[in-house]
Image 1 (cartoon, rainbow, N blue to C red):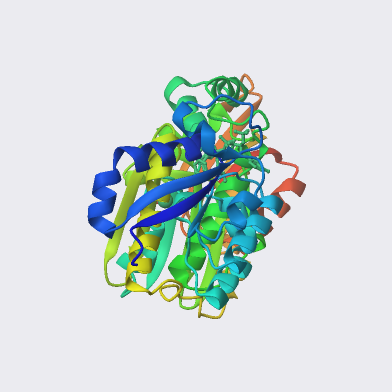
Image 2: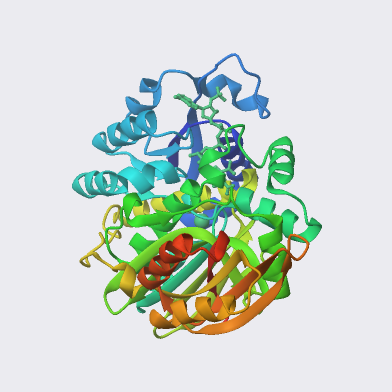
Length: 432
Ligand SMILES: NC(=O)C1=CN([C@@H]2O[C@H](COP(=O)(O)OP(=O)(O)OC[C@H]3O[C@@H](n4cnc5c(N)ncnc54)[C@H](OP(=O)(O)O)[C@@H]3O)[C@@H](O)[C@H]2O)C=CC1
Ligand SMILES: N[C@@H](CC=O)C(=O)O
Ligand code: NA
């Protein structure tokens, strides 16, 4: 007899797992109409079976033994939302070994071991989808893989970490200090008790590695992403940036020139005229430029129970549709392009530079001369008294310059007597 219901083993009943149950329950009829099959959650793996759950009717199917899911031949699909790397990886590989399809929200795992997991899925003829892993509820992975399949993407810029965007937005709107806003973000539950992976940019870097792999169709690794976090962004930088027409954002950048690629995550001065500059609070956004399509932008909630669960359940719907058609495991295209990473001399961008210098005649001339020697010209220059007029503060915005040249200039400036302190240096995007 033909299957009437697809049975799902849900691993994890926390924020996302609870949302998955709620959406499947609330939208059962719609899901059935779209797939032609019922979707039933058969078992839920948790760590603590004694914990009371916000959907008490599901408590009876909770288990702490992963084999209740893995060894149940009636379970067709595993949804992994426990998080973490080692156990989640073992469970997913074991599920694939048993011919079960997988949906996961786990960016940490997919950024590090996505290649191995997808290879195993291909061998076993299984689907693995992970839309929720990048920018939560925004269907950006599907857009890259399906919506832009006919195009060649040249640039992606993403605000893909809600915690840091919340912190930078508050610093900008209220002129508040980093440490102060971080505490507030922790109290509101946006930042983790240990916020390192958010504020040091690692969470965003994992998401950018996934975006670059799918967007450029090259096997990008996490270590290919240059990462710098926001812990050294000061309210002064934000205030000066604003005066010159910029908002500071933790920006993930993936850019292709010819076949050479660069991927980075760093605090960046984003021109106020660019739509990314207006993305505030915990919201995420991804800007995608394609050779044919031109500019596009995707905006929405990057986290949270129901937005993230929407992405998970939509992936589940795709798995079920594929099951009906008998085409699981055939839709995935492994990255097929050779990875060519840019040298620093090929990474071009404008820069914002703030420094404290001696207040003497000719200082600005010496600095512009040094920049000119490296072919770096200036777009904006502001000079003002500093430290009660005993020193001067110079803020520069350059025209496009190579990262290698800019790094060389900074190293040289550190040795110059007239340069007392380099306060900050940011990449500038979005003003072209
Ligand atoms: N929260 C969000 O907004 C987003 C989350 N994600 C990703 O989704 C995944 C889940 O996140 P989230 O729901 O927030 O996490 P939670 O911490 O809220 O929930 C984790 C769940 O998994 C269970 N669990 C954890 N470890 C194990 C284990 N070793 N064995 C069995 N069960 C385990 C926990 O059990 P118990 O309940 O008993 O403690 C809990 O039910 C992560 O990969 C995260 O990065 C992605 C995008 C956004
Ligand atoms: N910690 C992440 C949660 C979603 O991935 C964030 O702040 O964006
Ligand atoms: Na998404």
